[in-house]
Length: 40
Image (tube, rainbow, N blue to C red; front, side, top):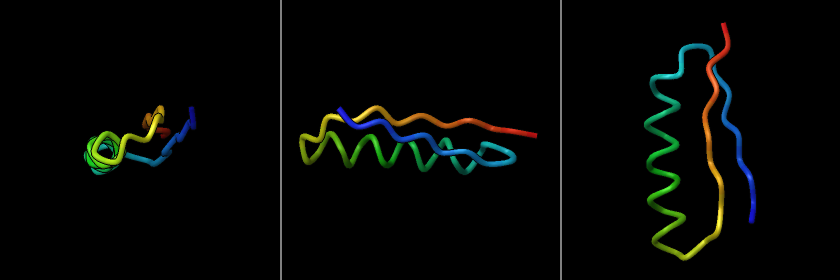
């Protein structure tokens, strides 16, 4: 399993990107853990 962490300042657009990445990973049967973290 691969782990991907996306980090940004606000977190709003990053959470949308995470959802799309998870959907795509599921579509191609890729085992991945994708999460987002907002830092300020």
